[in-house]
Length: 107
Image (cartoon, rainbow, N blue to C red; front, side, top):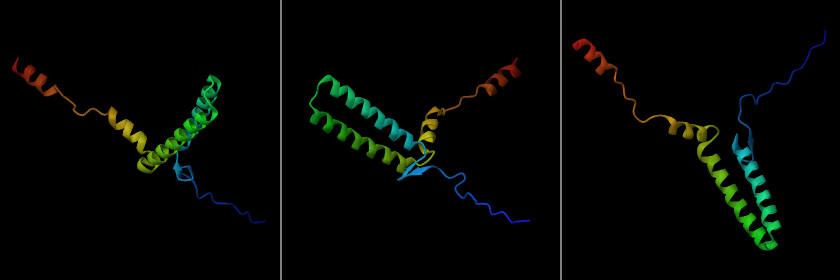
């Protein structure tokens, strides 16, 4: 019988990370870049000067990179989803069951 050697995967349950971007922020950056590519094509087809198109797209892509990296640093892997979910939680929960119970007891 020969002994088998198995590799241990030490990256289980670790978030995907690419150059500092974590988890879903990689997709946000990719989607933003595709949107900027489409915007460049539209502006170029309209007939705007190429240099103006390039300045516009480079400035917007710089802002996109800065914003997505800021989100990744600030909120981490699940933080942005937690922030969105927190807005859905009601600030006050009103319960009228005690008032109804008192009315039923008084009858």
